[in-house]
Image 1 (cartoon, helix red, strand yellow):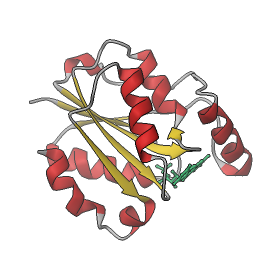
Image 2 (tube, rainbow, N blue to C red):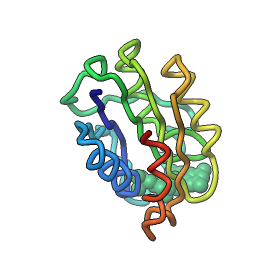
Image 3 (cartoon, rainbow, N blue to C red):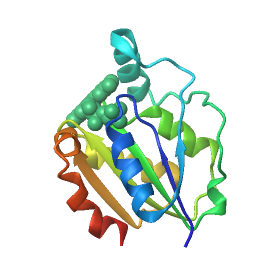
Length: 152
Ligand SMILES: Cc1cc2nc3c(=O)[nH]c(=O)nc-3n(C[C@H](O)[C@H](O)[C@H](O)COP(=O)(O)O)c2cc1C
């Protein structure tokens, strides 16, 4: 079964989960790159605003075509209770190209369910599975135990 792990990460939290998943499944990895700057303090404010308004942005070049894969794992941080808009932009850019999807979402504490719902709406199909992971669980490594059932 072919697997692609596609994710966006501003501060490397979602990236750690993506790399762990890709390593365990021997999957291809697509790091979604935003052409809009979301780093630093000003970037933080812009990120919150763009997530709230679901701003579709231009992305850096992509390496892989999601339609080539049986399952695409989509990884995203929560921004202002929504899925970070670079991932929404990725889904839009690849409309109709997803076979099976699974979502993994990282956040400080909340916004998981609303992000899953938003992702499902944009993909246009229900995910096989979803996984909510806190920033703390990534930092202390506890997220690794949660992956077993998610990857099945
Ligand atoms: C603009 C912005 C808004 C955020 N909003 C939320 C939020 O609504 N709820 C929450 O629990 N965490 C929120 N966070 C925290 C991130 O979801 C969390 O730190 C995430 O794990 C970061 O992942 P990353 O390092 O892959 O970017 C927000 C972070 C940013 C930058």
